[in-house]
Image 1 (tube, rainbow, N blue to C red):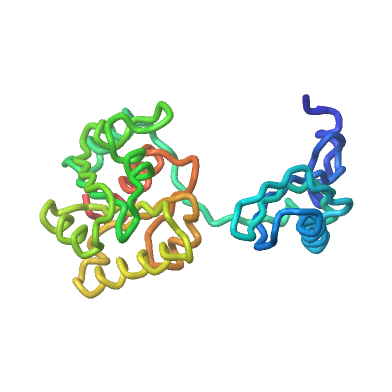
Image 2 (cartoon, helix red, strand yellow; image 1 turned 90 degrees about the vertical axis):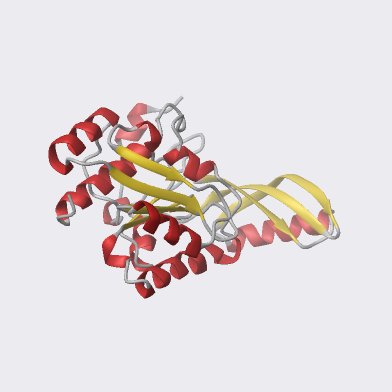
Length: 255
């Protein structure tokens, strides 16, 4: 149970991890090293943890992964702090409307159906992200765009080439394109997302559609750097995406 008195006394200019007592710095970290399972490997993990800024590191779990690899879980006390008051985050600034409010907004301010296409493009075979936003059932109690009155949502699934999604957007005269990127090893999502922007520019379409992307490693700041209108990370749902797109349509005079 959190000590409310201690929390009230937190110095937000010197925030550090909390375990049992305020400012104890207790931290858990997990990683795999390309070393054999054994005492030498555990010592290597502790030395590395110290270099990461953890005092009194303790290997609480290790497992032989085979082939000369070992997985470690290490506890330690973080010596570093962060000034929370100096943090500035670039994020989507829009008033979030629920599903019914979105329908009312469309009826009163756009006065036509809004067309949105989406897919997991490139080699990404995962649909959990795009399904959460697009599909009628949505995710975690939040309905997807298919259930929003006034929105025509087309979910084209996974492993869709960027060129194909662009053609689909042309066919239905889409107002917005949504790209989901779940698999991001070796920053393949950066390459794929950049390719989409380049293709749209080559087609003369970039300024004609609202372009959004989302995924666990996507931020609004990254999306904008890559040429997107907005980026949505974890803990965002269909209403977040819809609210942004609908407001953009009105603000850009596309109603």
